[in-house]
Image (cartoon, rainbow, N blue to C red; front, side, top):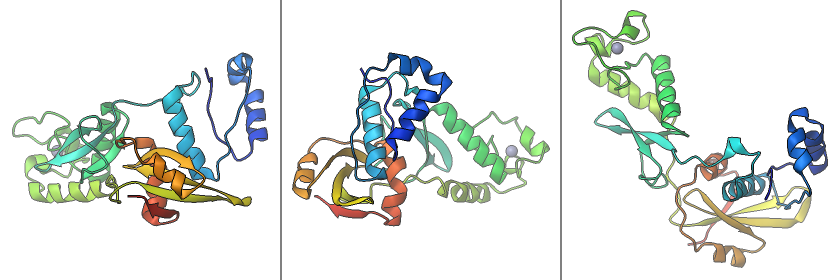
Amino acid sequence: MPLYIGKSVNLRSRVLAHLRAADEARMMGQTRRISHVRTAGDIGAQLLEAQLIKQQQPLFNQRLRRNRQLCAWQLADGVPRLAYANTVDFAVTPQLYGLYASRHAALEGLMALADQHGLCHGVLGLEKMPAGKPCFRHMVKLCAGACCGREPLDAHADRLGLALESLQVACWPYPGAVALRETCPLDAAFHQFHVVRNWCYLGSAPTLAQARRLDQVVAAFDADGYKILCKPLLQGSVRVMPLG
Ligand SMILES: [Zn+2]
């Protein structure tokens, strides 16, 4: 069983750092063998690391373990509702906002957003509104007053929409799977094609023909893949070849 899975551009210094860390002595004491997989670049390393941690759940990677409560905010009649990744396909559903590991994290995220923008916790459904009275946060000037008529409800809804925009989850922008070509910065002859569909990493191959064969399994939205690939894909900083 693997104890720990990690990535580095310099294995020697990374392994030495693990050896020297006092709080990792228990892990190192149980270590019998260290193996490595070479990847063409950092994107491939991040994708493989996340995939292996999910598949093998090493004892000392607890922080990165798969979370089954992944959720995002969705607007229903102007009121944010939680949508869970196990019931809603995040890769194709528009207007999802934020990406949270738990309901608790989502509530904290929305409260922080409300505080930043003077939105009303009562109107957002985050707390019970006292009948006919402004909410407590309005009295301490954190809510602009949508609860007590100081701010029209449609203005509040517009501001909520604007505030959420910065958190919008991007739908998968391709009709099917794509291959991302990554070339090793230290060895131009070494490149890999990383196959991804619905933000889910399916594997890497040395040729495009072999990459096509990876495009066969069902792939649901994957939060790790989303976090790793969202920027490079939407900014166009990687070479992308549609496989479908
Ligand atoms: Zn209020």
